Image (cartoon, rainbow, N blue to C red; front, side):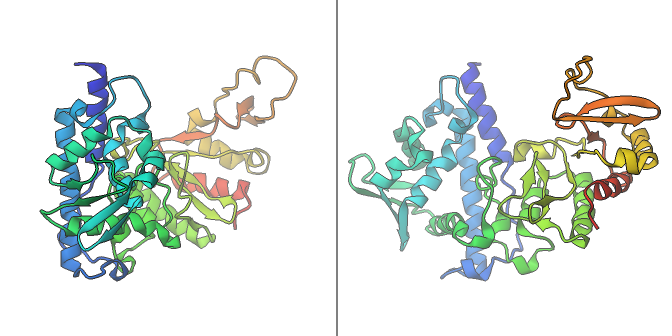
Length: 354
């Protein structure tokens, strides 16, 4: 198989896996309903998810027919389906079943103009039930409808416009939350146990990580730390903040939503400096649980060079001197609900968290 076809197939397959179908019984946030009833909106959102998954199936079978790259390039150029749909919405106005798109604004949209062969995307969308009026004629504006279910355009437009609500600022670009069409963003927050972004991320997490994050969420809350929907992650790990201060990072190193549930090894990243002097026995107990986290690993620091590296952490453990790189060291792999307590306790001491 051609390597570029394979890249496209892997991308569309992964994007399809990221879409978790909306539950059968589901309450929409009332402020997003507009003229639709709860059931109408919920059914339409399910239909939108199904439509996008069908599009991915068709693109998987014939990626070049949809204009996917036939040359080596970066991942962003494989995000054609959602980039085009979102660009249409973000540069258009919806009214009574019709989305009117401003061509000049569309062509200036970076998520649209970076892609080649837009006519192939329009052809593909047309095959899947969309109707484009005026796109080929190069008119100032062109119209998009979906005659099979006009509510699909309603919920798509609503979903994309939610970002105007300051409480729902999402860090989408890096990890694809928007592209996954997560129903959590339109769910009534009064029915959610945690913050929306917690559910968005943890819907993809393996059970053991979910258990840890539930516990960590409570511990962070006791110390005044909480999730920031504008900045919910660091190093692909859930980030709890209090001002500029960060809480303990725990995650499984995933970089795409579709990969999260397959990454089962849970890890944490910290930097220890003071506790080696103030709580040596506790550190040594932790080192017995996570011996690899304390291995000397800095080539420059261990080369005999007396010039101190700014990232060097020097300490003694079990009677042996260590030089560790703060950036590359102190990765705790194999974190569980049973051993995270010891790690968190030392983290709180190191960072003077009460």
